[in-house]
Amino acid sequence: MLRVWQKECIALALTHYQNEKCHFLVQATPGAGKTIMAANLAKQMFDKELIDFVICFSPSRIVSNSISDCFSSILGTAFDGRLGTQGCSMTYQSLRHIDAQFWSTLSKYRVLCIFDEIHHCAGDKETNTNSWGHHILNDVQKASTYTLALTGTPWRSDLTPVVLSSYTTPEGKIACDYQYSLAQAVKDGVCRRPTIVLIDCEHSTIKANDHIDSFNSLHELITDGGINYSTILHNELALIHILKRAISRLELIRTESPSAGGLIVASTINHAKKIASLLEDTFNQTTCTVTYKEDGSHARIEHFKSCDTEWIVSVGMVSEGTDIPRLQVCCHLSNIKTELYFRQILGRILRSTSSLNQEAWFYTFAEPKLIDFAEEIEKDIPNSCLVLREESEILDTHLYSSDLGLEVEIAVQKDHQISISFEDDISSTSPFNSSNGPPDNEELSLEDFNQRVIEAFHYDRQPGI
Image 1 (cartoon, one colour):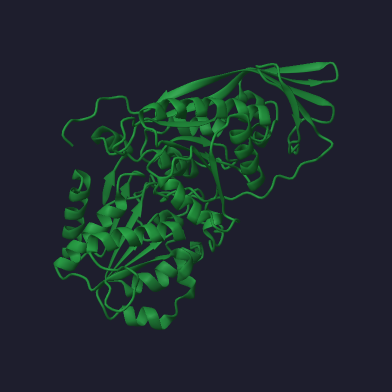
Image 2 (cartoon, rainbow, N blue to C red):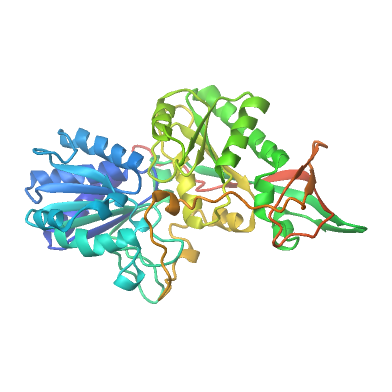
């Protein structure tokens, strides 16, 4: 049974297309059911004899396979592009392998092209497109009769135009044909209400020789003390502190919903291995680790969806479009600090299920940018994402991992060491990237960690929706 927003969106899109408008852009919050809406729209367009074929594009193979399964179920036929089927699902990466003859043949038919997470595709002209945007502008758009673009976060971190989109002026806000906000989804019971926990430190010091500088927060420590955020992310005691809080929360949730799971988004492969080791050896938790470099990660994600393993630790694998509804706790421990990535990761724990407990808890450190992102979570399109650059250099997007912002291993200067003491009176040392950090023989001490809780969208759910 379709949700109210899905019915509204389908009706509006059909009217849009029947009025000879060929492109329709939908912004719907992560977890709202965009793929189901798109598949039902395609079915109705087949029933009305508006289209002969449908092609879906998405950023990763695991998402592409999920879309294929959804469309196959709703259309009642195979969805693999073979003779006699009604369409297929492919990745944006595959666009560069499709020859001109394919597009020429396709243009002879009435085709609906659906773009999942369209914000990965940049550009409105040749001078500012990335690889995927270039193919959409030059190949797909010319061969398609109708296009449907889907996104939960309709902006790009480089602030360039999203392909096939129009913008209001002078504000530079993207113009959507249909919007379904997280606020409305929470109110309707379609998505879980997120609770964001910012882990902070109210007393830290940097000691150099006989001089001591004191800081009252991680914000001050990073901005005034020159400490790299990676230092905090990679320190074992800091990790233990944030993991302990997240584990306690997941254990509480699992008393009501035993299948609930947690997600840890790590910075690097070595970081992920360290976190998994802490989870298993220190906290006796069950884990599954998936990285973009390891064979079998897609299969492990599929297995994790239906098993009872407590935690999945990811580097570049579990992001937007990856549907694991049992996830209810997340630790954002990546060094990527963009609002787009922040919301993509948060979206992994927002999809409502039939489980008794429907809480969604998101843990991260109180880094300055992350604080801002958390405070803006109730805004559908944040103010920081409204202005477009007129001209900017676009990085070519050939691999999905580049859009996830996968990081190289952090280069460290081995002669620089930080001594960190935690509130439990434990201490350890960890190397750090000291390009902006203190000189040799300095000692960093962190004590008295606390947390700030941001509970978004506080209102009662509307009954009967």
